[in-house]
Image (cartoon, rainbow, N blue to C red; front, side, top):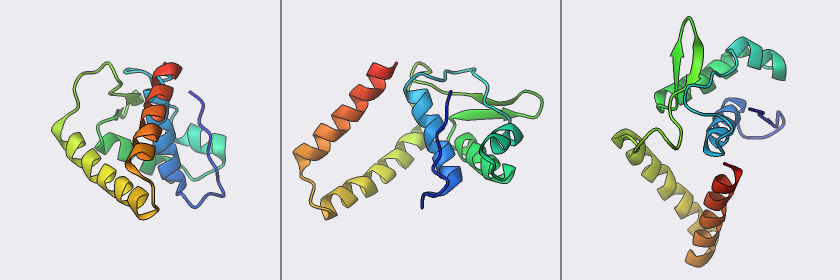
Length: 129
């Protein structure tokens, strides 16, 4: 799994790490049971503080995407084949989607444009698999 970060972006680095890992799982570049690099290794690879990677991994753990074991490290816990989503995920996802749709509406995107873009992104994840 290759991660690309923009160290000059306004998006916090921990959030970029979290997002790239989720995208890699969606594209099936990482699957349930696959190990993630250690926090120190990933931090060294990008020249960032390992606490930043810890923050990203902890967020992924809280969201149920990875599990962290002191001996074996971080491992992918969920992928598209793991089964139906857990209720807390659905509630959180709907809230985040509400905000994204509100932003699209504020910026004048119409319903068809939003749906077309969502469909294209979903197809992209399927094609990458």
